Image (cartoon, rainbow, N blue to C red; front, side):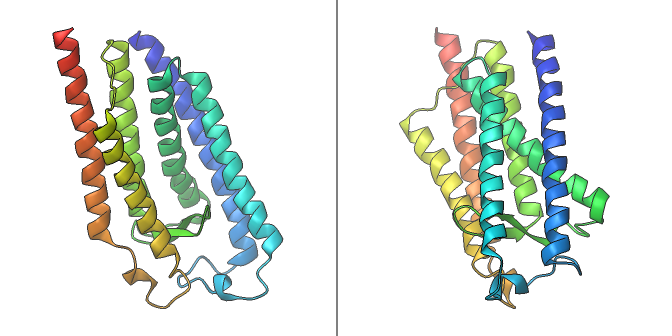
Length: 224
């Protein structure tokens, strides 16, 4: 079972790294169009009236298609709901991390993990220092490995209602923080609008409830 898991994770990693390359390649073209002198905050392009809405909505469609692609892949890799969730977390995390790795290779950007980036456009603009999404991705990847390793040992993580509420609260808080910062991407004081305290709180909530789920799974296994 462990060998099968390792081989599957290797394929997942290859898929995610290549997907990250495709994502970064598209961004290279977009930056050449909208930011030929390099991506700089505050983003002036967001404040211009002649912003190409056709390209904007094309980019939104591409982002949605990428999410569908990740969902499709995790449904193929996973043999049950737990595994599918785990593979979604793993693919999303590696895709996001290697997106920045490839941008560093192609554009020598970011120069620092504290450089700001536009993360997403659905449903509104998300923005933050690069460090924030990388930390989230590392957390997601860690969760995915724990779920998969426990699953092959027949230790099944089954979040209860309280666990789902806690995890959903952490996720929604994180999204709200990114979206809030995105609202100020075109303002001179953009760097003041990412709430690091809130980010740490959201991370801790997610980790605490995930650990709670893991402990409950071990306890359930012992008593069964």
